[in-house]
Amino acid sequence: MPILVTGATGTVGRALVRHLVTDGHEVRALTRGPDPAAARALPRPSRSSPATSTTHPRWSRRCAA
Image 1 (cartoon, rainbow, N blue to C red):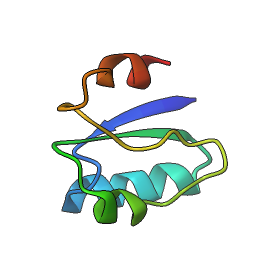
Image 2: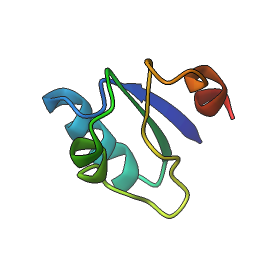
Image 3: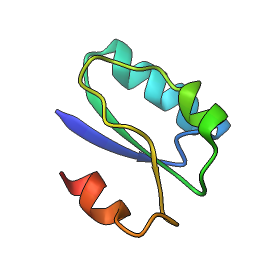
Image 4: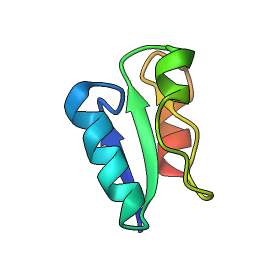
């Protein structure tokens, strides 16, 4: 089941993403701004979507896809 996590690079968000990935969920990560290093640090299941940002012009389409 795909799950959107807002604040995915924060302390709580990172822990939540890790837990969801471990449980086999497809995680879509939404962050406050572009931070490539923080996004790369998120767990990457084989079917996860790349992290995106609310400052990205097409963020809602990427999250909903």
